Image (cartoon, rainbow, N blue to C red; front, side, top):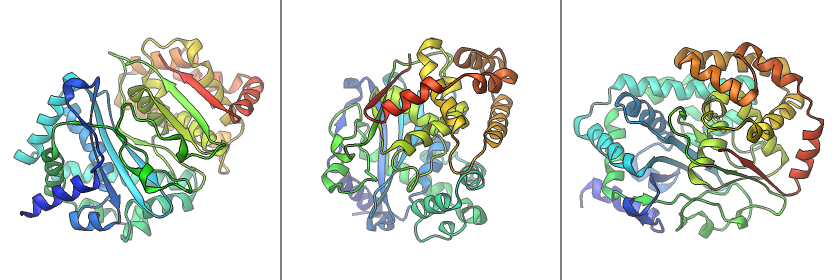
Length: 396
């Protein structure tokens, strides 16, 4: 048995409960894989768990360059106290799945991914997490880097070892994706890896149904539930690749694209996203505002303003009650910077229209003032009630 065959068998063995569904039978197609970070299988595969996030960027970049529209490209990072997993997925409509398969095949057949692109995208990821260190908590960032890159110098200082990641060769990425493709052109459901206590291994396996919904048993009785339901937004909606945020955010995980998690993941799966406690909910919406360009501002098409008032009001509550020592002034500066970066890379008209649709602001220059001036007294009562049960956020 060749080395490649052995690797494929290892992946198959790990994903033994994966449910492969023919593309024709599914409304949405998912190409996914999972690697237990720092474990024996990862060592046998000789493939760093952290490379999955690079693949997110590569999927997005290469797909855009090739002219194939994506509904979503992203990943999910989950933690459990004794084992770590990194899930990455790419989700496409049925008519798009063959395009992405052909595209990925071309990557490893023709090796047309340049080392320059890999280095560039690696640097982007490092910059993202380095930026988190500056504005949130050094402890959280260092914990994340340890989880992403176990037994690596990166777990000591993420921003100071760029050359380690940049040295990854395109052949490594291509070879691994070839393994994934050889497993089969199918659809797989995606299961969560619980960061909560008392979670047995049975609940960590891939579920046998779509859409993805974590078992309720994975969460304690006080867990808050955010249910995000919606239909596809066509035409003027764009979603950028990013990790899905889950878990006890105050202790275990820090996510760079929470808006992507809240809106994109929820819309595509028409499912539920669970959060452990009140701080988890607060943390998510703090990022939902700060990283609005990845989710809210893009989900503008056919959105009714009345349906978004709940989201907007929750954001206001977060601004009035900043976490991790952040001040309103700092949040404002960071937000303006991120919005400015977005305008540099997208059509200004799209951004302006999104701002108007979602926040009732005529321009970006009035966006923050509009948000800050709205009263949040009623919302605070709503948040208190929401902590006792479920919260439904409807995005059409």
